[in-house]
Image 1 (cartoon, helix red, strand yellow):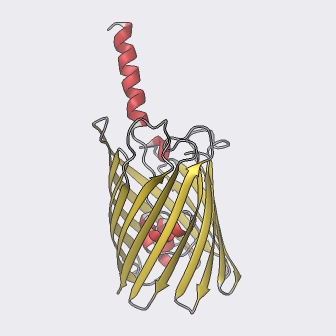
Image 2: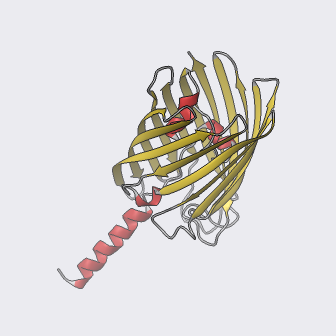
Image 3: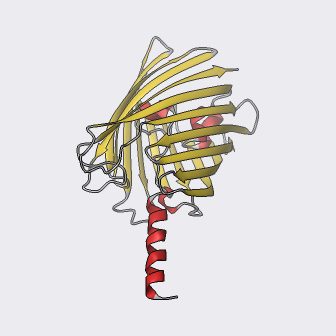
Length: 294
């Protein structure tokens, strides 16, 4: 094999790596907090963020989400049209028994990328105030323009500890076996009740596979509770890994048997180079979800 063949193969490998990128899907609630919530006691989010979070809520639910995204201020440097995105989630959760868990089907598309993901999570108590969780993900990523498809298996390890009614901490380790190296994350977080109806959430994560000092993510949010069952949230994130930052807001109504949530999130470039956007471009996402609680 001559040098030109080696060069062609090398370029192909680079292309496969670059075309595998797609932004992580979030639930409507996580979207409203700019992705923060590793230390929050949540149910449906156990299929997305921290699988240990479901342990402290004895309930079962069916969850459905539909979302979209669009590009604002499209740059003249963009060679092709940026197609609007869409996502859809079907999710079952059960935390009524000793072993808690979820199962989800997730469909996502944006620009030239498509993702299909199945997840299954399990969690259990580790003492009265601590929990451990395991999330399994089977993913198919497709780059339509490059006619490239990638399938892989991943696990997410989760931990949560509740110190008191005011303070909880959590941690996750995403893809420790490096099935898809760009997804590798180690994240720690906290949730603190500032007053009875005002909650502060903060997460900090790094890509442990690629210079953690330069590849970090910070996410923070506030949640205000009105009339017992109405919640208003706002958050901000800064992601040095993707070169994106932005803000988000959302509203939730959570009743005894039904829950409705709506959120909007805006992302823009913070560095000279981003895998997704050019300078001054913005992606605006929105999603609506409903949950039936058993």
